[in-house]
Structures are given as structure tokens and as C-alpha cells.
Length: 66
Image (cartoon, rainbow, N blue to C red):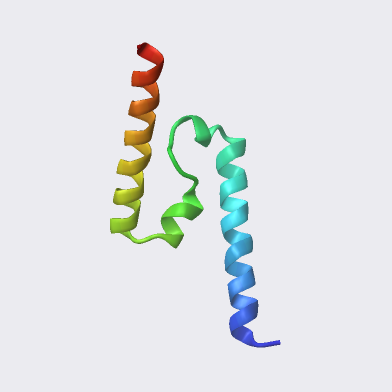
């Protein structure tokens, strides 16, 4: 097996464990995205996706208010 494949699988296992621990400790109540999201996206992507997500949430709230 190629060493790069093994390292990639190990990295994804690490990300899965981080996310599981984050959910287990209640992180989903305090953050928009799990930790693996920040490891797999650039700062610019995180900012853009966060803005898009917050805008969708704001529009949902406005619909519920009216």
C-alpha cells in the first residue's frame, strides 16, 4: 500500500475522532462547524461559507417572524 494513502486514511480517522469528541462535549451548541471543517478549508473559504450560512439563517428567522 502506498504510504500517502495510509497517511491520508490516518488523517481522516483523526478528523473523525476530533469531530466525535466535539459532538460528545456539546460543541455543536457553540460552533457553526466541527473542527475538521477548519482543517480541510482555507481561511477564506471558512469566512465565505460562514457568511453564507449566517445569511441563510437570518433569512429563515425573518420568514418565521413575518
